Length: 99
Ligand SMILES: [Fe+2]
Image 1: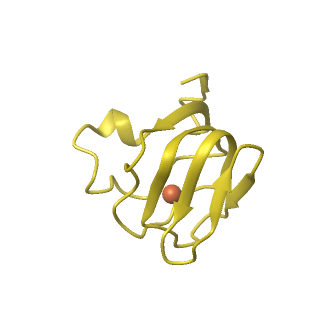
Image 2 (image 1 turned 45 degrees about the horizontal axis):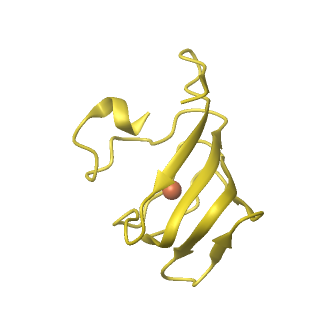
Image 3 (image 1 turned 90 degrees about the vertical axis):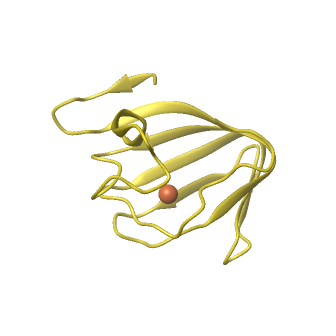
């Protein structure tokens, strides 16, 4: 985590997905999510949208996306302009990981 506003829930983070790892469920966010891919290859399975180094992607608030998979170990700069999720997703066991 590089920066977080505890009041709004907005954050900026570096996030790494090891090869073969992803988000298991379709889901939506409670704010706009912006992702800039620094390295690797990451795919939205239903659409085939694939992010590689230099890709910029936005999931607007409320838009359903995923599941996803990292075809290669992938690092993103990830920015949320508010809280990440409307409710804690089932793939997190620790509430702090979902923020
Ligand atoms: Fe997402």
